[in-house]
Image (tube, rainbow, N blue to C red; front, top):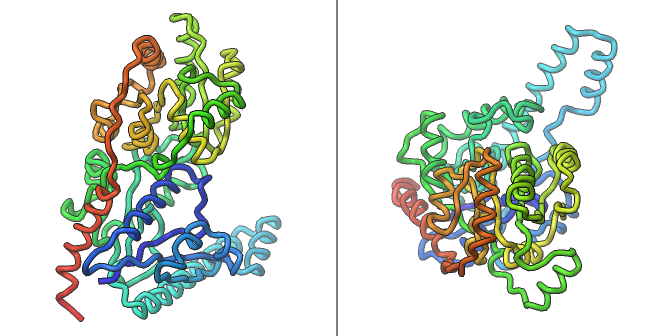
Length: 416
């Protein structure tokens, strides 16, 4: 049986945890071997030769593996149509605007369906029996059975968040899940909590929802010398085990706000001046966080590094006093796993998904209680412990995925 794994051609490390998740799954599947199942990377893109040549994943895979490239043309309305829509809005021709928007939507739907049919032809030409989407993304084909992935359902748990309520994100996600979930052969979640949430919010067959437990990215495989760590810390004006670390994009639900107030409590209640290192791209909330830093007079305590390399992430795990992860609504977090396998103490939100991930390797806190977070940080500072670093085996990923694919293979053998 041949299984195509969808790989986003233009995905970059700046995408955060999602990049590490996809990278680890792709490498784990492609580097392992199965007696009867072949994995084929599927690249769907809108660019030309440059997009292909500049793709991290394509450069990694195309020389060693059979690959499928499919160019998916831009689905935006034609230039003339966009111009007419703009003019009609300026002239306040509401009836014409509504008509043109309806025409544009129909045009986009038609083009999308034609592209899906074209990709179906290519998949059948390559004799693909199943397509695996390791990230929440639209289905680019029609007829071939597929596995989809659900990372979180934040839009239903917290529709009031700016990252959900703005730009029609709630509506877009609802439309996406209603289109994708019912027809999926399997749905992959990252934890038992994630599966339960999916079954609660959507009426899907529980037998086709599979749990692929969260795993660390390839960050944990990087080796750092003591000299490299020392030099990097000096360059950043940091001291070993004298700072806490929070790697997260600046979304509201990542809860940087409460962590700042925990630092303020550490200062006032415990007389501890703790440094806090942020990494991650700004998704619109950094300016608000920056104002809170100023109001709390924490400018000297905060170091925002923005996007950093995987090597720097590994240095931070190995030199931080603790990873502090007070994220809200996420059932799981890749940094929790990376910290655990790097020997970094963990303080994280007390949700069931995190407990499934880290078990006794983490301290759990109420993520909305700055007092609780501050107390846990102080406890880790005052009572340092030698951490037992568990052994990681990438076969844990492939084992679950192979079993799912084998289950489908036994059914797929029933027809030509």
